[in-house]
Image 1 (cartoon, rainbow, N blue to C red):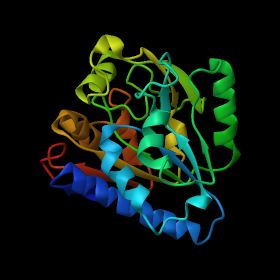
Image 2: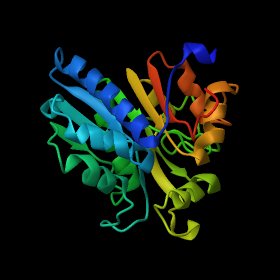
Image 3: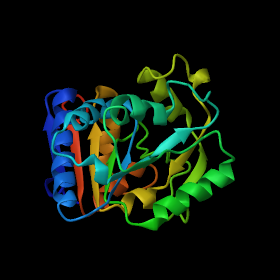
Image 4: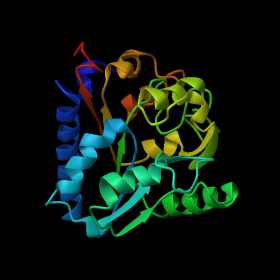
Length: 248
């Protein structure tokens, strides 16, 4: 696919990129809330999402009483009150400031098989309208790192082992002090779960993501760089800053 055929927006700063993404998500939610009683949204939790989440938290146009929210992935093995839990991350940046119709966070303290079944049933109930996501340094979407990524995954959510590049990114992002403190396993929504959503809004910022962005936009579609599959989605919107995407 030619780059010109993709929905790519490049901003000077990370804040500008996040706010543009926030406005785009807001516009889509406003459109949907005019014709639906329920809007199902999956949120990623990462520093790349901060400016977008901040924008959404302040929106006066979104009817949050129609939003059913899910988180995209979650670490296994952290304390229940750990700041690095993605559920807590989203709670602090968004859900403590708004009141959705419902929110279904992955519970890493539950029995894994039971939790996989619970989330699978919830995801399977109705289509997902919208996903807010990012891309990892290794091209992962959610925690579908290259060794475990499967474009034809039969599962909606699964337990995965995180690869070293993924774990080191958490240190680079200042979420953990050392790689040894980053959990080795997580629960993640699978690639088909994400790709089956009606609309995707992807925010990627920072020079450490430059290689991943280059591969995402121009390399062969392959699980070597899982994010390349996003180019096959019918309604995927990319928001980059110039540090992550200087060539466009």
